[in-house]
Image: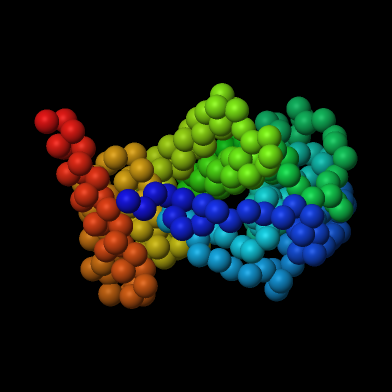
Length: 264
């Protein structure tokens, strides 16, 4: 049975090799208007690999997700880099009240490779900012999904090291991953009822495929089968995605039958 980690569980990241994918950029904070150096990924150098079954992106030699958030070291405003320049006056006021007034300045991370622990902290701050600004539920949920992906990457990286992870350390990381995965699933399910497509940059077929994977993970088999059916019946969806949905449906049906037999 295919799990949410898909086909790339053996892929390891070369931390030092990351440097050739990175560059430094001067950024002016949209919130406090102070300038700082931020580290970015040279997208032109990325070599895409097969994503995980839940669409977690994979690239050769680097986990670009670690560099997906821009975080101001002066006021604390953090968001996905693509949204960093988008702030309304109301959002600025909310940031000042709930984030900046309590934030302690810290050194920028420009020129430094971002490790998983730092990236997770940045994404958590971005999530707190999103909640503080009362952004759409889909935006908050997608940050939760990315946090789950980062925790998964952290586990993979540490397990590949000679000393590895203790059973307790791995369990703690997996518990955190599961927490954000649940938050993502609940938020994305709610967004489907409340928001128009595209949602989080996804069309309806891709979005429902992702929900099928998530609902399968949480053993909501009938819900997952329904989402797969929607993808297969969607005329605007690629044949490749439909094939993936059909394979996923087979896995769901098999898992449901196995659970029913186990329950007697």
